Amino acid sequence: MTVQGAATHPLRSLYQKSVANYWNEEKNPVNLRLGEVDGIYHHHYGVGEADWSVLEGPEETRQERLTAELHRLECAQADLLMTHLGDLTPEDRVMDSGSGRGGSSFVAHSRFGCRVDGVSISETQVEFANGQARERGVEDKVRFHLRNMLDTGFESGAFQAIWNNESTMYVDLSLLFPEYARLLAHGGRYVTITGCYNDAYGLPSRAVSEINAHYICSIHPRSRYFKEMAANRLVPVSVVDLTEATIPYWELRARSPLATGIEKAFLEAYKDGSFQYLLIAADKV
Image 1: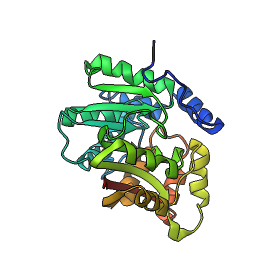
Image 2: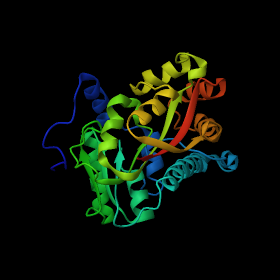
Image 3: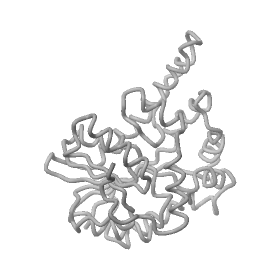
Image 4: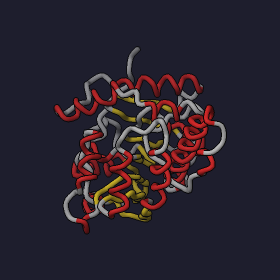
């Protein structure tokens, strides 16, 4: 199979190669089982009040109920991101940066009818997502590319909206936002949902460092997002602290057979104030 956008290899460093290898080999049940609920494969966390009644009832169906509820919460997170993308139309083109197995891209196309380009440095993810697009019969409108979000190769001003859903911690923001400023049309919208460490806490806490090690990433301080956006003509229009809203997801996941062992670090970091879960929406001016 030919991977779209793979004419030149997108990896720019040994670190990026290690990240690509991680996601090429990743078959984590907490991603795959949740995606099997309805065929939408997300690679992010959830928000909203959990339905704790899923822990009750017959033991033989408990995992099925837990999985469906975790997926409902992660779908709620994706829906929240979509509400901040602005008034998109079917004529608009948008980019899912760090698109994973394609979940958010399909949500965007279903909601707005727009053309979506997903970008990932994982060949496995790109192949999977393009296969999903064909199965859904939307391959003419939703396409996934093996490209680097720091240097996508797309034409300037091509996109009305771009988003990162929990993928900015894999790149240098001082390199990322100039690329988005180039790609966005004037008045275009950028949205990210991300975990960031709290500047007021000081340096990254032990729990944040555990998260970095687990996912081979480098979580940025909250301030760096606003600094780099301001330097690249991205003006915030909405900032939403989702920290409290994501805790139920993590508490429920910790009690699920799909738990990976990192749940304790997330809950500790959120509750001690060293880590925050933010949605930031900004316009290109």
